[in-house]
Image (cartoon, rainbow, N blue to C red):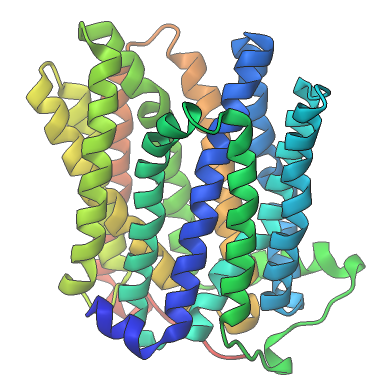
Length: 412
């Protein structure tokens, strides 16, 4: 099945290879920014500052990126961003060679790179529905998620060897090559966008375009439900998964950090396996499958709250790794299906903006609450809320099927 899609659609092959190269560079560079920031400052606060510089652009420009992606030739935009990124990232290597590199260079370049990502990501996501047939989409989405998550798992492992050979600073050199590879592969994609699929706008119309999309999305039952549930699920998941799991393991297990690394590897392997199984189980995805995936995801978080021994931690992580990719793949499929072609960029950027906004709020609120509430209790509360939220919307859909999906994606 996977090989047939790649054989019959060379555009998909170029798209996936480019995405793999780009994500490998992103993972390695992300580590380099953090490693160098800590080496230069020996401050957790300054290291956190680099992490914030990578999130803030999406809150500031994430929605704008989607508008721009819908208003220009997406292929040309992607190639230009890749080529602009090459000298930008190599500037850090040059500054290091002349012993001029300091912390603020890292912050500035990190911020600019992520700003470019605000425009690159929605355009990149938006061309996938254009180069695929509807019956191929579940398979390609699964393949894409497998590639990106596989790189995310393997990237940190590869970085250990790279640190002992080329050194951390040349992570940026490697990233520059991945940008060039990505640009070449995107150039090879045959993508002919019709003028009717490009909504030319002026800069002064950006805010109006964002507002119009928000109003349009609110009126579409499926899109509105998708965005609302996404915000809720991500809000209750982010802190407990990204921070709470490590804290809980360190508080309750003698080898907390080691077990945490093993669990992340277990999680990554399970997610890749589920990604490969999804298109075999379902040719098309729908809102019901999305909500079932979210419910399973929440169940995994709830089980982690009950965990008192190592086997239960592995079970909780496994259940989470089953639900998350099902939910994620279904969400992407639904966006591709129900967004008009001239709204794809804004749709994916709006989705990304909501994800980052939920992440930021979750980290802030639960980070504060965790100072006086145990992580076990927070896991139980968050997992239960994810289950209840998904379950309520799922029951609503099952009781009122005719009104769930009133809108079908059109080309204009």
